Image (cartoon, rainbow, N blue to C red; front, side):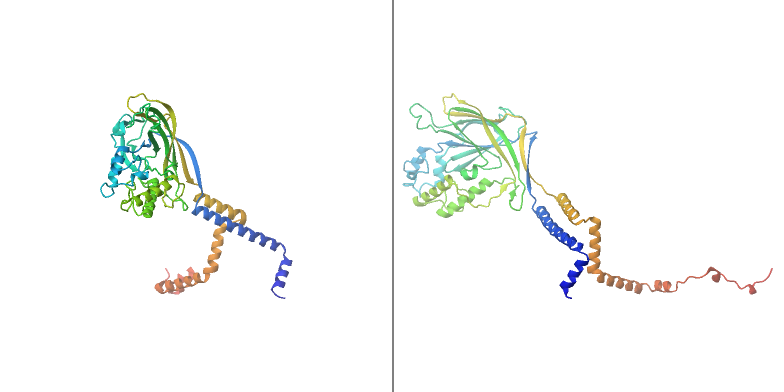
Length: 434
């Protein structure tokens, strides 16, 4: 009759089997798809973001980076370069520059302002000892100074925050007001773990910026948000102390520019290239750096993001004229609210408990399986695939046990059931009468 004929006859005897097997087949396919999704979520769990407000016992102050505008001493640059040089970005600075006589480091160091030429006074919580100051050299910004707090604050008020008095070298008069209308200070507020970079494409995301003119008193209120990211397979992050992704990106760009121009500038630290030694190479390096500074091109630097970061938001509380005979600027930076900061954390939204619940729900709802049912299936599968092997092992163990204990075998072979009367039978004829 053939295979198909037998199958047709079998279905005609019990047509309900076809429906049962089809439903079982569809349920098995659905279960396999759901199990694949469960395992995928367990290996790469989805991330959910939680936002809440946290009351802190102490509060973390930001780092403050201050850059002067204009950033260079025009007289010094002009004398060293043998040409009109208000800023190194102009070509007149390099046409007659004595490359073999004046090192580029000396040109930039002497052409920028020192610490005592920048700060008249500074402090955190009224004490200069609560602040660490370091300087950094940049091409467009000149020499900038970064103040980092040594301690966390327990109170919030104007007296507890930063208090800075900056001293400028320009004196604003009626005749020169149009020439120095842009004179003042660039204030950058950022996480103390980050290093300041002047490249806009790397620093604009997590750096707050305020410009303050000379003879101006300003009060800046702070608010902060703390971000905690989760490391995933698609996106790694770094928890290393002292790591700065902004600095990593800036060094990466410097190295690309130095390799392109085959030389480096004094502001390009950690670059293994000799300083530029002629007008052509220096102009090429400056043009390439200008294109990066003003451009929006992205560089593939593979710099990992920090797992934890703090972003500060500024609000101008007060801005008024600072009446002083000298061209000074007064700046206060502090918190005005309670010790509350917004915490934004990323957390895995799928764990082992949810995985077990999803697997159990899929198997139970679609296939009617339970833990006892799974145990029974495993037992049958074990006996089906390993039954012969198990029997051979059992027989081998029995033979080995018998060979090691012959006494037990003899005792078991001679073990018979006896009647108590036959054991204690007595020959009455041999007993004496009494």
